[in-house]
Amino acid sequence: MINFYEILDEVESGQAENPYAAKDSEENWIPGWISIDFLNENFGQYSTAQEMIDATESEGLKLYFAWLRDQGILT
Amino acid sequence: MADITNIDIINAIRGLYQNPNRVVDYQAIEELKAILNKLNTVLSANVQNWPTLMAVKAEDTDAALVQIKMELQEIENKLASVLNVSDTDAQAQLALVKGELQDIKTRLNQTFDVQLTGSNDSKDLINGVTVTAGSSYVSNNYNFYGSRIGIGIRLASAVKFRLDVYSKANDAANTAFGSSRVIDKTTAADRDFVSYQLMTRKVNFVFTNTDASDVTINLLTVTDFMS
Image 1 (cartoon, chains in turn yellow, green):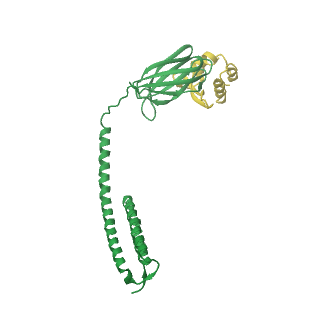
Image 2 (cartoon, each protein chain N blue to C red):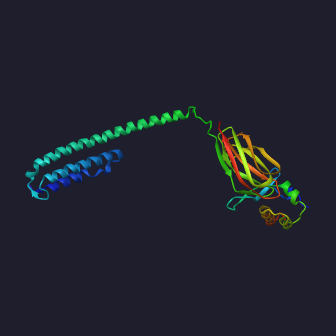
Image 3 (tube, rainbow over the protein chains, first blue to last red):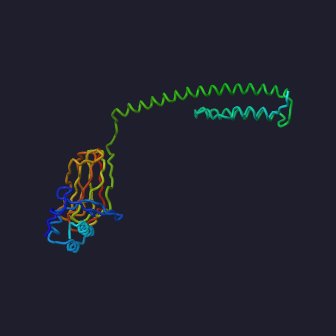
């Protein structure tokens, strides 16, 4: 079990930085925020980045979890 | 007396008067060009009247030379007049421009009776942006001029989502005073529209996809109600 509040920095109340928050019509990624509650509710049961990547169909979330792994925040 | 030719006289006159480089007043330069054109016309007419390119005795040309000198004097007088008048005109024009500028500045400090009713301005601010599941897209800052805006949003698929409007200071740092949640869809929807009373002129929009699937904002349109 992972509590994302313990491993992420809040940039806004309940929000963490997400470099893959959105993508424009030209396929450029746009940084924004991600809800820490959302992460806890949907991915808190997993322990590794790969498990989280496998558990979602979201392109942005797959990249986000891989980014957390690259940052050393997730294993 | 040495023999001279008519062309010698004409070239001497032309050489004397065809060097307006010292004149910096553009209006005077234009006037000077016109005078030089007239001078050339006068000299050309004299050339045509004489048996040009033939060596003639100076006395033969005296009468014509006197005539040319008189015409040159007239041109010189006109040239001096142009330069003086040009300066005066420039000052008058400058005074006129200054007066008009002052009128404009005075008017700008007064109120304007501008008819804004019916001038509602509608803009498509966001289109084709895909927002990651659980994530928030923060828009650019926008300035509005009315007291209220209407916001309409269409999504490519039905999801749970929120829309917040952040009121911003008009400073370079875009300091946020606070935010208002104008849309909060806790059940999946692909559209909504709402009216929002502006708190500040500058705002931005934060679209949050609270669903587990990514969603594309097909269109977010904002109408600036100035009536």
